[in-house]
Image (tube, rainbow, N blue to C red; front, side, top):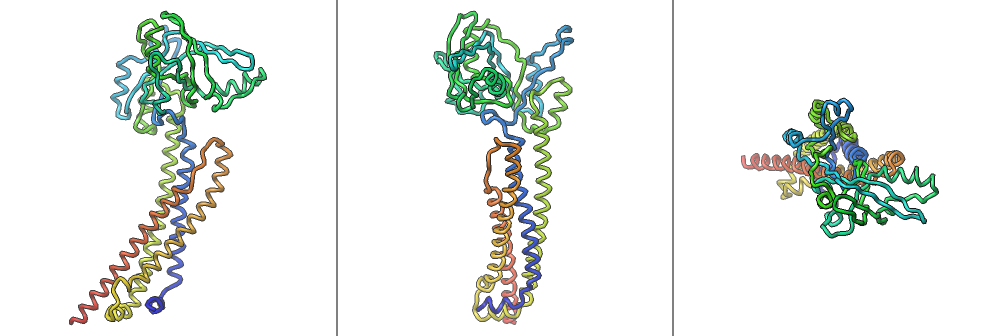
Length: 401
């Protein structure tokens, strides 16, 4: 009955304008957030077992540098200088083998054998379960991370030319390599177990504990200077990194700096889109508040009479609060529906270009939309309640007079 009394002055054009503006703003915000979450892995996905914010650094190798005595290895002073840079978190060195390594694999009556090399980095740079990345003296199995291009060379080159079966990463994870270590300490036969494949490391990575033990057992006892460093940075998009490496004549082995710049531009574009959407949402919120204020102003006499008849301010404010919450909920539902339809369209296109990209979910849009809807609804309800309380206080003051 109270609602029937108060709804007479509702302006349909005003609330339609709020509804459309809020819906457009909500769609822009949710679609921007969802698109960012869906597309970001294209630029940032890497090896799940390697930390993301790192760079592999080496010195430029030239024949002239060899003649003039310029070393391609990093001294302790070079490492300390990199550690002092403001963009650096930590620095680790690639530890090479000081002995000979060979591996063999039997398949369909054929024995594949090749000479190999191992390298290691400090365990803190490897993001893998520690129970899979451990070695103790006396163990017979060596955990190994292989470059993915090694498997591609076998599958699309060697296997096709020899009529051998192609191997998937899952199958390779179940294959055991026969590894032979040879050096000054003699010869030892061990087993190698492949625990992962890397797109970013062009080396055969083994645990640091194994390589330290193997170098001391089969090597010459001399600690070599590293020829490559792994540098963990605060922000790969920091332009000071590229400037510093250029001044020092250092190279990075992958396109991490370029990928970081692309990610930064993606964040910038999404930030601009979200700002536009939030601005539209704010303007729609202002339109709704203006409509509610005009509606309350037209119904001031009715509201005063209802309050003087004994209706509480909460009961009088409830119809307007319910109206705004309902409008916001309908806007959220329609916006999420539009985002879901748009997402299916661009996910199919992205999936064709990047088949290995994992399919995400609609949860980012749902969470962001829910938070925005609750925030706007809470502000609407507070503003309406304060306006009704102001009318109630004014009516009591007038009665007292």
